[in-house]
Length: 153
Image (cartoon, rainbow, N blue to C red; front, side, top):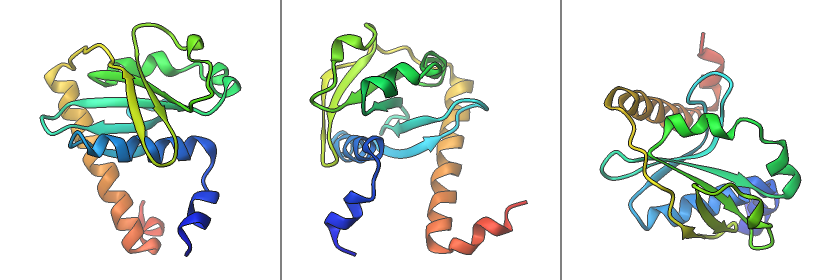
């Protein structure tokens, strides 16, 4: 498959997710997309740092996408740092203060404003690291063996 064709199939938010994940590798973070920390919430990008840091990045591709998100404050209890990732033409003045900001595209992202740190409690961190590991492992297994999804009870 042609690389350009691969990107053309991505939705705008998925392009931002890709750029965020690529950028965070520079800081030795690994990422998964669409992780569910608790029923009713699904984060766009969860990043796990080299010292067990948990970052959540919500990707907003448009003003309407941001306005439609009524759940983002629920993500704050599940991470050490919370960021917004938006494209260069997004009206960043809409984003709430007290959160991090990344400018992103499909190829990279830049941290414009570091998110304040609110460390997770040890028990919550353990839960999140386990969820991250299981999510990543199940994605890898489904990639290697697409039929495995039908085996899940």
